[in-house]
Length: 145
Length: 433
Image 1: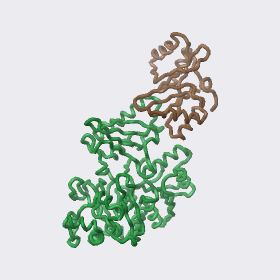
Image 2: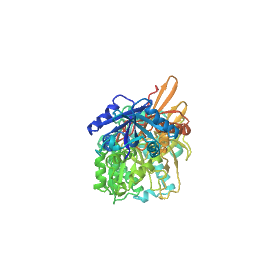
Image 3: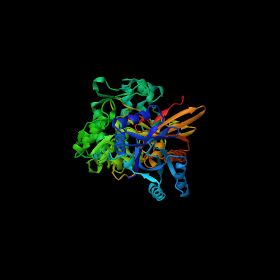
Image 4: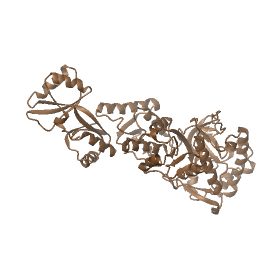
């Protein structure tokens, strides 16, 4: 199973991120990595957490808008040119990345990158063919749900 | 139809009845109230000289401001020992306005509300959940008395406590819901969030009667599909009697004004001139039977149109269209007339957008600036920024196309826009008047 990411709508105002974190904390949700994309008035907080579906439910109960979707986790060599090799592969095959971010934890000699594609399965099949290490949900998130 | 002898009256007989009652009402106000006496005298109008509808133009208008200045009992035309009920507006924009009812007034009010319920197809077999606020606000008690008069089982739950509203819908088997349209959507939101397993198709709820704030046909479609009911518009204002001044019948095409109790005119809000039937303008009310607080040519500020058609329900009473705006709510933005209801129509036409919005008008330098806040729910939220930006641009461009104004669209979190069980705060005008 692919990695599940939870995304949260937050207004660009003091205290809003805190509110989301408090809700997650109340449900004992552990955040493994996160990134925020923002424009003027609002941001989209994207996270990999240990219990994405539970997080989605408790956020909904607290009237916080969120969604769960699948992203691709790819292991790359943690050395110069490691990311470049992967991105080149996308470019050559005309796969457009919607957005991407890095994972904070390292697994052996590999760093983990998170990618969002329009068509996740197409990207996945390509990378498997090219010999990249695709992370499963269980590798990253575990099996708490 | 509950009172066919009254509601199926011929147009000719209705006009006769109205003229006779108008003469009584004008004299009643003049003889028993000092404010009306002075107004009529100042305008050189003597009710004894009133002989035809054409004389209406000589009768002075009554403005909201005068009602406020008469706080609390200045417009009463009966001694206090004849008054059995008092209601009052919230007075958020100045002194409250207080209205009184005699026993007979309460009786008539109950009757017009009962007629309204009967008009939407409710009968004594129904269980009516009255989720309008009970108290000084006329919504709760008006529908309550109407529902009892109809003979229906009446649940006086009042507004709020949405969890309990849903519980009663299930356990008591309510068949008719009476509340504000925004609260009806609130109930749907709450259910979707907290009781996703609840299937409205399985409830006995079959009809809703919604009023106390203007709403659009798009909102009707949304309420009907989400609650799986037929939704009808009931209209009223506390100054005239409360809910039950007019109501849609099962045809859902215009609200019949109960003309045997209320005389209505459409005027040009700028000049006060009476406009011919079918014109759009401000609706002006004159009570025909009210004893405690007669209203004579009350300027409602509500913009609508009156017309008669051969309605399938058989009532001869004139119809009024849904209120398109208020002449004092009308925003003039860079010279363009804008009613909040127009913005609402645009929003609900964008797929997935719920009509939880707020319009904020400000003046930056010499230019008017309009911002529309729209709440982001799960159905329009995306983890992709480009999708969210496209949503903003789509709303902005639709507003531009339909209303010819450029609005800044701000996407905000759910429930961040103030809303109440009573009336939603739709417009904030920060410009110096």
